[in-house]
Image 1: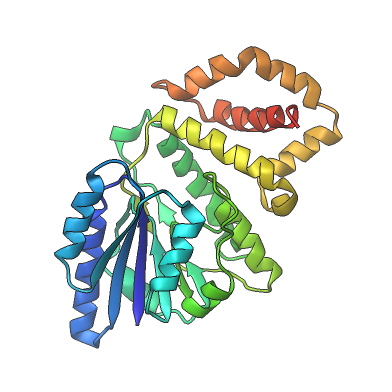
Image 2: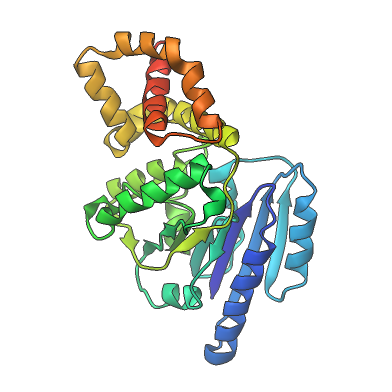
Length: 296
């Protein structure tokens, strides 16, 4: 049996649900696929969860569950795995969209214990002024070189992967991470340390939505705060931490902190504005991390 698990928070993933259900129903008729789709709302305050619930209840083999309070990205995924019935689990984030008519079939064709299908950011002029869109477009290009080598665990993402249920239950996500960010990086390292290699396959999904620039900057700051708290555990699995350690080695942290104090607001204004610059974004992330060191 296959379980498709979708954690969601204040987002209408009805189109994603419908697309996945259609593929599964086709395979059920052709190959007698036994499947279930479970959507878990993680304590949304916005009434959009009711729309998702209505869609889920209208589809066969589909279940909707809801947490009264937000329990976090790691815990909601662990919970989904615990209530799932399938031997294999496909996790997909709610703000993704299906672009391949063979998405489910591609996952079923692999015998890997854990694999990720990746993601693409399709060109769309509508998002040209969006920081997350620009960042993901660039990140996708940079990560392609790691698709078939030992870097796969370092570039693990929870947005689109399949795993055998028993493996995931034996190696769950770390629930001590309550803030946004880096739970997937830590998970990739945990798997690596246990001799479990993530396999990459060509089975991407696409972003269906990008948050506003100000929301993405705020999420980035929260994620870097999480990284700062986890730095001793993540270590070399974070390129941002590697850059920070080099600056420490070269004794540049103090002067750079002074620069950040002067230009922090103007840098943030650019990133939250209509023409964000990715080079400024790179500098902002590193300098923001250095500023957290000053508060230790």
